Image (tube, rainbow, N blue to C red; front, top):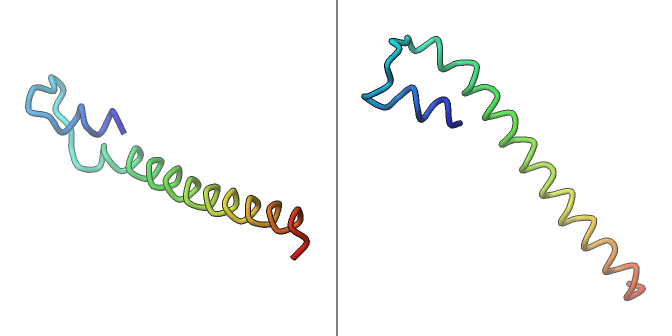
Length: 56
């Protein structure tokens, strides 16, 4: 994500095309999607562990 921010600023010394942003954008989306899945798994496991303690 830092690469995207650096490349889109006006003072970036190297010229780039929009195709140069595809790879960092795909990697960022994959990690964001992975985070959402990991967070939902963590929340569900937390609820499961709490329900096991309470014996629901």
